[in-house]
Length: 158
Image (cartoon, rainbow, N blue to C red; front, side, top):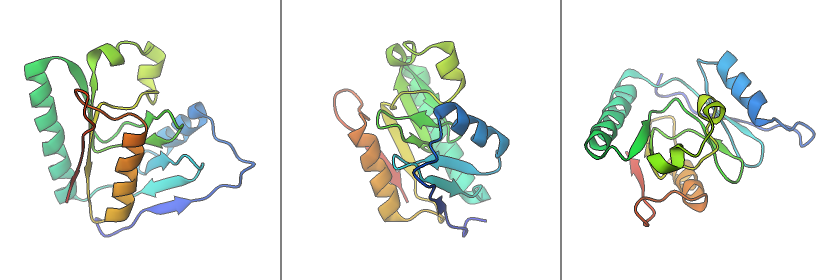
């Protein structure tokens, strides 16, 4: 299934999806990973194949192991969406947020798509992703505040 490409679904400007509606849409379509672009378009992504999923799990595990030593933040896998300051809702393959920033969110915000830009993100370039699109996504994270210890860090793994 790794050879299936992403699909962009463009909506008319008259259709504005709220954060709660988008969360509900994702919950009832759990077999499709959906991201919301800043322009209101939806990116539909296929489920990952075994090899890509295994690599992704390893990356998340390494990040979690690093965090266990530091106990300074919260680690996320690829199945969470973050509401960025520009209102896009993106889902990195792995992410980390400083604990003091995470603790500023309400329990309700933590239960849905957290309205926060991660401090660190990892994007795995899977066969269904293009390098250009992935680089644009990483720039969007940077433009919305991805940072780690006062330097902006993003990683694309091919």
